[in-house]
Structures are given as structure tokens and as C-alpha cells.
Image (cartoon, rainbow, N blue to C red; front, top):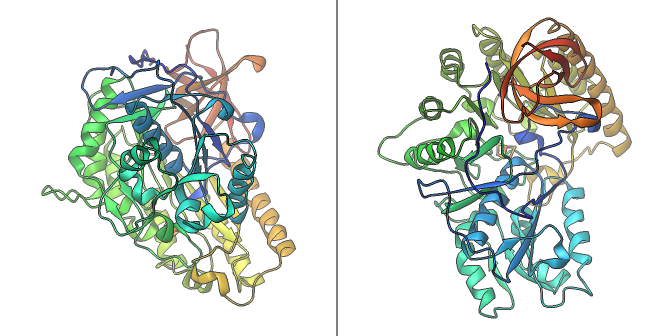
Length: 495
Ligand code: SF4
């Protein structure tokens, strides 16, 4: 059952980038308690457009960069691509921002706290910037724009994600002595293509297939910060998947804010489901995941594709956001509770078990006790394997910001606690039922102090297990479940 793992490409010394804030649930995977956090292998890898496994990147240059990432998996992968652009320009990565010539913050504005953190980070440089180039990327950059220069005059670069394709040009301006440069266009049909992408995760590789969003959920900043929906050509996505397979990756996750809204802009005109099957057919790729799906674009053929294609993982992340039709309407989610639950039924009717996870917001303006109760009963009906739950946070440039009947913070917190406890009981019951079952696990962590290894099943469950074997990172192994907790499983390797 095991398969050797070999990322046959160079590791980058001092290459780790910092990722903060956890994931925005819109692009989530199963929740895990802090003590279960994976101890990732610290190796990093990058892949180039070249079919050869390595590319000559000068590492003796004096130019160095540090990038810290906040927010969702889309941001984390954008940072991998930005790092690739910098490596291609002769920069090298450092782990300490004080040692860097260029310090970048790839930011998140999905919640007010995340945006505030960025300004706190910028404030740290007020007296010590000393000729460094400080840059703000991502959602806060797009949202605040040139206002950032007013609040933090030592910042030189402000660039939103829809303008990342312009980064080489903006960096050239800075290197030529430019004092303040911006990339804030939203009006684009282009995607962010790079010759080199630095890969921070040696086990799972990410491919963005669609950027931006054409929905207009009333609470969400994404259409404002990431711009309109743009899909990459199916050939570009397949070429990247083949390069990743050549580099030793066996698991790929396709990314997009609404990944299943994908529409191939090339003459081939593939739908999302065609792309899923195409990536799954790439030689040596054993697992394909995708996130995040919008319920409106979630069609039965996606379930059929998963059912028929073993490489497509047994997991769908389908954010519902509320169980109340009145609140779904106010959120402009474009589906009803009944329509959503019908899609859950399709997934549950598949011939192999597919785990389902979701995002839910509590305390949206006007949410009554009865509306909240409907969200709780939806948990019972959907039987999610995990949820990402959030209290509503009003954001600038969203139509919900000025809605009446705001829910007091204390009440939002109370509802969140009630919801989490209800879901916790569901997860305990679901995970206990798995005791005795055997799963194929891709090993991605070593918990030396506990004498355990960790990994994920195809259904994206975390499982920690014991074994007499060594050197398992990147291996596929069979593990029998011996115990089920609320957030993870415990097991033993089947030898
Ligand atoms: S679908 Fe809605 S919540 Fe998701 S990114 Fe688009 S606007 Fe935001």
C-alpha cells in the first residue's frame, strides 16, 4: 500500500514563509485542535515551468525577502507564487524580517481583527524600516489602497491580488528607486501566471484554477478585493499538474473562491467536472481535492465524477452560511435551505462515503432566535464531518455593513458556543462509528514526543497513528482506527 515519496527538486535554505491567522473557512479543511496541529516537515520545494526538475536560481545575491501571509489557502498559495516571482528576480528568502531587504505582508480583510493585525505589523517598522522596502499585498491592500501610505508612510508597495501579474513591473520600479508604487486594478480578465512557484508544502501542492468572484454575498469583501471571476485555461492547469507530478507530488488541491464556477476560457470550453477528471487522469497523481464550492454551482455530475474516479478525494466542502431561508436571502446566497439539503442528499447517496464540511456564520444582522435554531437543525440534518463557524463581522464595502438589527457581540458569542457544542457532539458520534475501519493515509507529520505519525485520509480526516516503521513522511499507509475524537482519529498502521 505504501509508495515512496521523492520531491526530486532542490530545497530552499531558509525558505519558510510565515502563515498567520489560520484559514478563512471559505477555503477550509477539517478543523483540528491546537495540540493536534501538524508538525510539518520543514523542507520547502519549488517548481518551474521547465520540464526539468530544477532551475538555476541565484542564491548568492544580496537581495533578500521575507513574506508573512494572513488568511485563507488562496492567500497562502498566492504567497508561494509571489515568492516564485522574487526568486526569479534573484532574491533569496530569509526567516527573520529584520534581515530582509524586502518585507511583504500578504493580507486578509475577511474579519476586522485580521485587518487590524496588519496595521499593527506595519506599526512595528515605524522607527526601524531603515531603507527596507515594506510592501502590503492582498485584500487589505486592495481595500485600503493608497490610504495605507497615509497611515504608514514607510510603506513603498501596495498591491491587490488582481494586480499580481504586474508585480515584476512594480518591483522593477522599486529597484530603480521608486518611492511608492501601487497595483490596484480590479478591471481585469487576466490571472496570475508565474514561471516559478515556490512550494512550501512538500506533501500537497495547490493550483489556483479560478480567481475573483462574480457572486455578491452581502457580508463578503472578496468581490471588492479580488475582482471579477477569471478562470485559467484547462491546458495551463493540466500543464501545472503534470509538472507537479514530475516533481514528485501525488496530491493536488485545486483552489478558487468559487472553484466549481470554473469555466475554461480556451476553445476546449471544459466545465469544472471535465477539469476534475482531467487532473485526476494525470499520471502519478493519486489524490485531487478542490475548495471552495458554491452550492449554486454544485451539480450532481460532480458527485458522479467523484463516485467514478478513485483519484478524486472523498470530501466536499460546501459552505451553507445559514440554515434560515430569511437569512440566506439577506445574505444573497442564491439558494434555499431545501435546495442546499437536496445537494447534501446527492452526496450522501454516492456509492462511497464522502465527507462533507461547511462554513456557517452566526449573528448576521436580523438573525432571530428562530433563524438561529434553523441553523442548528440544519447541522442535525446535514451531519457535517466538520464546520468552520464564525460570528458575523461587518466589513467595509459590503451591503450588510449598514443593515439594521445588529446582534450584540455577547449574543453572537453565545450562539457560536451553542453551535460549536452541537457540532462537536455530531463529530464525536460520527468519528466513533469509524472505529475498526481501515483508511489509506498520506503521512504528513511526525509527532515525536507522542511517538505518533500523522496524516490525512482521502476524506480529509486527521489521523494520528503508531507504527513500528520509520521514515514515513510522504508515504501512503493503511491505518486502522482505534479511537475517534471530536476533531481527529487515532489508529495503528496495518502492516
Ligand atoms: S461566493 Fe459569496 S462568500 Fe464566496 S467569495 Fe463570492 S461573494 Fe464571497
